[in-house]
Length: 96
Image (cartoon, rainbow, N blue to C red; front, side, top):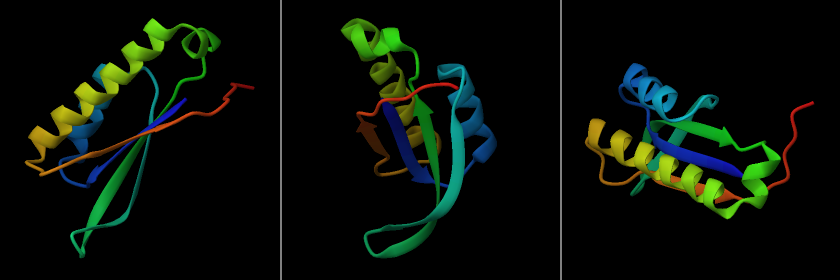
């Protein structure tokens, strides 16, 4: 599974801090998003769940989703945003 959190690019150090508290590994990349027709700098946080046990154990996967939602809420509050987008993408992943 891939979990993406897309938010306004504000307080990048605080966002990184929140991410590091929630997950051992993640990727952040910057882009340009649009909210209600207005362009704004954005950051995408990508969390890839590679361990096979998370794909098969419902409770572990549910825990990862809960962590991501908690992280999104912290970012939303820290950045004083109306909304933060969270995507759940079912994918087969492997570390090689």
